[in-house]
Length: 532
Image (cartoon, rainbow, N blue to C red):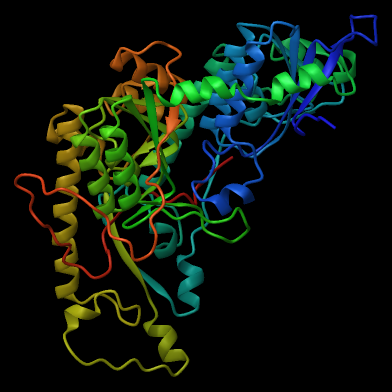
């Protein structure tokens, strides 16, 4: 039996009196996290339960082409998405609304559900809708005092004052710099939300709305009704089910050989080596963007004669300074135009990797910037003392730099601070060169400070506000491609253990060795800050 996915149903309009008529509406249920792309690994892709944003947009594009379609009812359920993703979904629904009637249905009215339906002119809520429009806030738990009671302290060296990646471990409260930058970010995203949803009316967030009637009076919804008053869901209709489900395989085969755009994702913490994914399970860390894998994908795309532009999709809080620099260099060396598109966060190393892109796109809600450096480690000396543990050492003190059983010595601290200054100066230089800004200006807007995408536009860190769709449009424009030029994701491919990687020796190649056994310097933004 043919059937539609759980999130898609066929229906007829309530205004159509013929209950046996062919369905002319689609009911689309939105719920879940909508990661941008499916995991690269086969096992991870199979375990990925949530529909991807890429699959959602493809589905919406197919609906826009259905000549029998009279409308789409979008039922917004429990969305576990960030603000940038909510904004991107809203833009995608707005593009669909340019082709057919789209009605947004929001039984739970929240900051995110209204952002998702912001591009739709018809927004409906039931009389019993739950309404919560409190604005935005950030919450961070500081563990310094908790750890100290248990004999654990934390070394936290940082450049500069706004770099807060490790302060939740080393401190017992939020400092003035963290409070300043989070307040500025929240003010910016609230202004963006009000512009997107409420035509800039500041009074919306202070009104304490509790009912659908109040939302209707304020103009935040267009109608009070239940979903069954809009459409009636029907049993499956074979012809239209098949049309919505089956991809145009012939078109996909043609796209493989046509000139188009390659997408190279950088998702998760940035590390050296190969990218690694993890199943979507509780207490399991997220994906890791390995510099070897990302660089291989960039070079593969750059060599492909059919790839005329590259979109570097970055959703990363950063990580290894070394790995970030290696990826950033690969971007700079691409002969193909590169457009960088930011997701929820492209901060610290996540910004480092895209500094030399030809064009940078961010959502107004993106967290970016955080141009700074951190080095740190837990110190268990007091815990060892309490429990009778006695670490004994032989050899050079410098070799114990990363040992958790002793704090940094004066010599180790001086060495780390010198190394951090060098990394920070290199980071500033990469931004200044790639973004055509003065070094003093980069240091002024750097210092570890985060910025919203909206504010980053004003200070020159990004070129355009938009989403992945806007990034694709920019890439096609830079490459002189048609608006419908094909898009395909490029990965490093499969490497079998023990198999060699083949290459040619470029002129003037210089072997460069990282002198530290374990990477120590991080360009990282702490994602433990929760935006609610």
